[in-house]
Image (cartoon, rainbow, N blue to C red; front, top):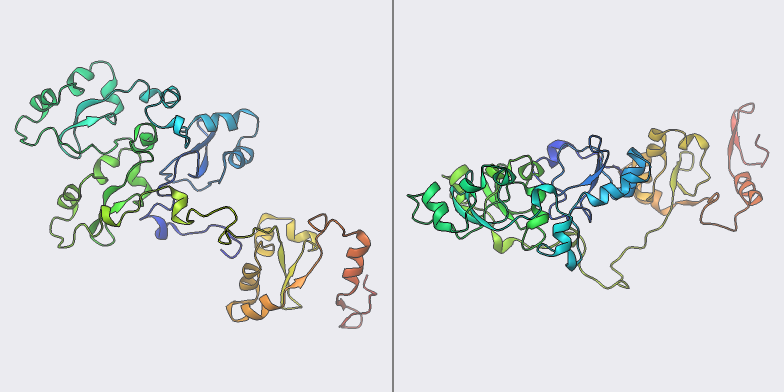
Length: 360
């Protein structure tokens, strides 16, 4: 909204992942997990309505104490330094229990390719007692003979889709996770990338909605579409999440904005907003009041209180107020009082407004 609060309706975000390409613990959002007792950072957060930019903010708001932050930081894949890339000792030591000592095998892709594939991203239950001898093979021909004896193109040369995509950061190669073909029901065709709906990459839905090849996706969901896929690897720009909104520029580049710690609030009588913290105490007395009256940017204040039509006049007439206990370290109580004495006030007895410095 105008106060930089996120109120995007689910109907506008359900078909995409606004955090596509993010890396857990680095730039993926954090959310509280009340069952675990700490905060988590995931690539595909679903049904999470309270998210935070940092683990510290999440912990302070929901759990407190000194253990939440450490547990939160230990819960995600180490990133992004090279010593933590998949295959290194540091990476495996910190892996989830289901990923520890995971080796490369040929295994049957039971849901997507319906073929034998090679990799480390087999389903975790294949490691449990009694299953490896039937599902994990050193030799690809053994896997094919057991599971797909009539398949002439076995084993498949393409890797399988990660069946537990949230674990992809632990064994994906290259890292971070690669793009997939996925059904885009809004255009009745298959797209490619990482911006598929978040729920496609969680809770086992990966096996039904994410594909390594266009033909697998199109054949399954849009077999009669003349334009499938509508995008492929040639239109995909792999990279990290933050690269999608900011190019790699030097620190002294003018492209980086100057971040100011300003506060703006409306002055109804003046028809504009005031830049300062000398607002009435009641504006800060309630969360709803704070969101309604206090803004970090002048355009948000002007739009909400005076409308689009008055935006330009409001922006051009911003009143410089006083920062109380803020960035203006030279401001004193007497300065604040002198500033307020210059303002107009309603005189109830006279039924008019006055500017005589004799307000109550």
